[in-house]
Amino acid sequence: MIATLSNLISLNSYSQAYVITDSTVAPHYLEPVTKALQESFSNEKIHSYIFDAGEKSKQLSTVENIYQNMAEKNLDRKSVVINLGGGVVTDLGGFAASTYLRGLPFINISTTLEGMVDASVGGKTGANLGTMKNYVGTFSQPKAVITDVSTLHTLPHRTLIQGYAEVLKHGLIADKKYFEEVSEKPFSEFNSKKQIDIIARSVEIKVDIVRQDEYESSTRKLLNFGHTIGHVLESLSFSSSNPLYHGEAVAIGMVAEAKIAALSGMISDTDFNKIASAIQIVGLPIKYTAKTSVDEIYSLLSTDKKNSGGKIKWTLLSAIGAGEENVEIGESFVRKAIAYIL
Image (tube, rainbow, N blue to C red; front, top):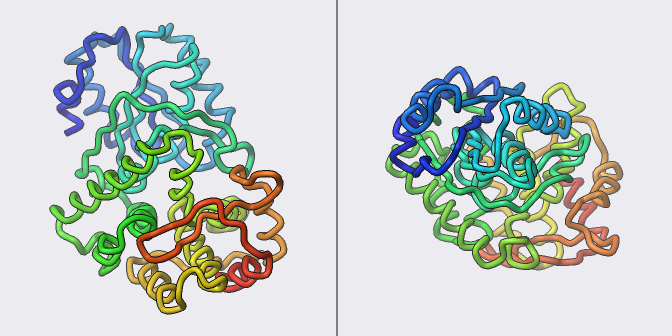
């Protein structure tokens, strides 16, 4: 599909193409993307920027380097940016594109499961502010999102499976039957047709929610399930010997936030146990093993960018397949839930 990029979307109206990717993806896919672009652009009108792979690069310093390179290449407002990679690339590249020259059009080409089912879809772009996740960003919709499932074959197992957390999340907040289907076994054990069906259904769920509430004033907050505690754990892990992938942190965050719902009576203990068991079955973690404390995690929750008026606004489950946003919950429930995952 990457090789037929020019057939998938009309590029003739753009003056130049600028590919943003990272050091892991570039050796695999930059050349075929460049060849596909040559059907629409002369060689001197195709540019690329490669940054070091990983969450550590998701900083404003990287964005500034991209801006400088864009300026050196004389990009104009009719140029198109193509973000080629996983969630870090589409978040960071989307932010650079949406703010350079007050906004360039961009296309996301996902090469990870996380990117395919979540990061590339919905129009959120962003960079981290130090260890604070996505504190800088825009809402800016891509002109197109392209998914080539063949790229999943080049992913290390851990990288592949961490993206499955977002698949489980979509089922938990919106579709009980889908959740039960996708949690039967690890993603890699489904055949390729079923894998495509899973990706398509996850995208469908997310797009439906975003269509209702593009700028996250209400319904879109459902997509934050697992992320309030998950982002804290992800940030904490940056200084550990084994940093968590985003999806791993979200998986543990979903266990903690499902536990809050169970402790407060929103869901049953039986449903909680189903959720925790499902996350384990698909190969994701349910405990945070690096050194920390309930106090440290709880204090960091106060920095969550979704808070309002100094109060933590939770997205919690009211059932498997249904969520509720803007829930205020007692501190004791939260502390007990944090203790559960440690």
